[in-house]
Image 1 (cartoon, rainbow, N blue to C red):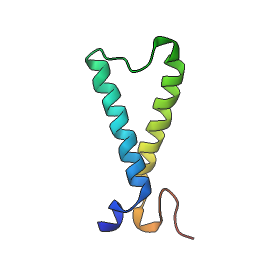
Image 2: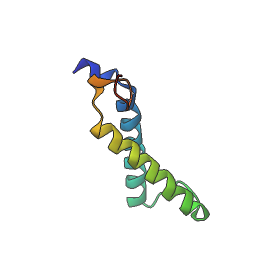
Image 3: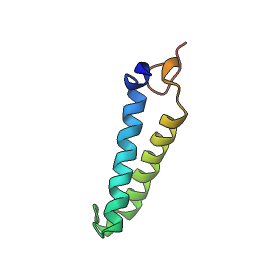
Length: 71
């Protein structure tokens, strides 16, 4: 369990999940973090953050540092 907390991929994924959560909760309460003209950019950033979260879920922290395995 200790190696999981030392994995950079876990922390990147956790921060991405927190950012997505903050943005979602802000949308529920009507807070908009970017102007409407940046909707396409916001969608791209959300997609990128979602990929980081998924990579953190499927990564094996005992097999490497970050998202890659040891060779």
